[in-house]
Length: 523
Image (cartoon, rainbow, N blue to C red; front, side, top):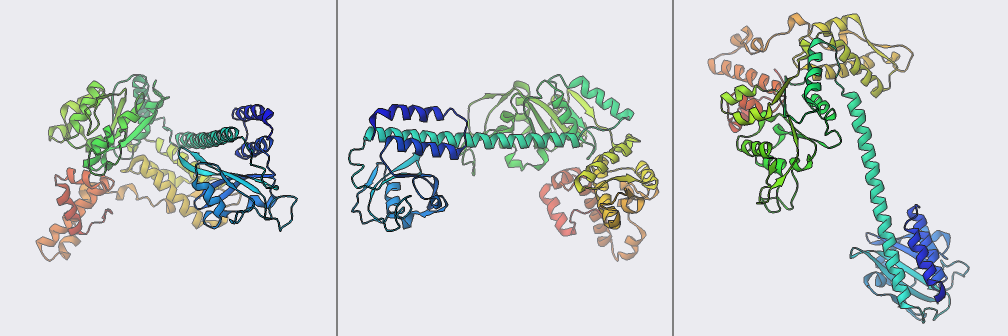
């Protein structure tokens, strides 16, 4: 060993930690530095991958060594090195087989006698791999400087840690970049579209309240775009650089609502194996969007009210109080004033949420916005399917304008997507050609307006019902089946909401569905 060059080599390794280079380059430079300090003819850095050691860099070994995998159980020397926290020396007369026999450059395949030294590498007390040195002459490592060796081991582990940290940061940055791209794309595809009088009033409301911290209650029928309005409120606010956290209150099991909103401590309830933050803490500095807020259980509503009034939350299982700075935007398709009157929603919470109410207009109130939206969805489908162009013919445009749109914008989006797929299958010769794909009434699958019945008409007993029903019990069952099916359809299949709307217990409603054989499809 050349003692005089140890400080220079160590400083060079430290300087490498501040340089931008690939992991492969860092590993290779480590072995180059090793050869400058310690008298070895070959060196290798092997990473533990399951039960095998994979070469990350080699120096002095034949080129094919990088393509080899060393099974630890089949290599006693490597296994002994890996299990020891101290350097392990193998003398020339060691009976343990050498994994590098025949792999050292410039030697014959019959070489079996040389000096070997290996050390295990640990990151956070977890074995990472091994560093090995081989010399062609026995006794080369007799006078090795143990202090220099230990220093080099620590520097090697520090380099590996830096490589792992940089790799993790790069992966995180790449993921966040992809997420940002997806968000931008999603925002581009989900913009508020329309120039009708009803939409101008909506834009006006958004502009008035967006920059404030007032709580906003967004109301409107299912499918009108309440979540989209919430997103625009957040992006137009002073909190736009902070998170918008979404909570679907209707999708939360009643026993987990409190944990989802406020978090919990380890052991707070069965299954709480570790502490976790709730949505309020995640939204700190930003906006918390409570979708379907009318579905919140009464037992949780006082705690939500306290969080809104004081900005303080308490995790279940803990006495500690956390302060949060969160703006609340809530949305519902229910009439909360009616829910208050029937005792299903707290009046004080309703008034706290509805400081600034915003009503999102139904699609049937937006007149010719239907065609603008249809064009938007046609373009999205054109890009998604790689089509040259899609257009609506006059019959399709008239049908869209005169339809009642019970499912609102969501129904229009799905209808256009189905129509494009049907048109593409119906006219395959036009796909990929220079012709425009035309959407006609025949592929829209849209009921003519004069044949659209009201919900009350759908529930009425038809003559066929009464004629085919031999008794009152079967006629009553038919009526119940239609009523339950229609309610489920109106509530987007949400059984809790449907049960509440029908004034039934959730368990009884579930049993009723099974008895009637209702599968969630509208009859």
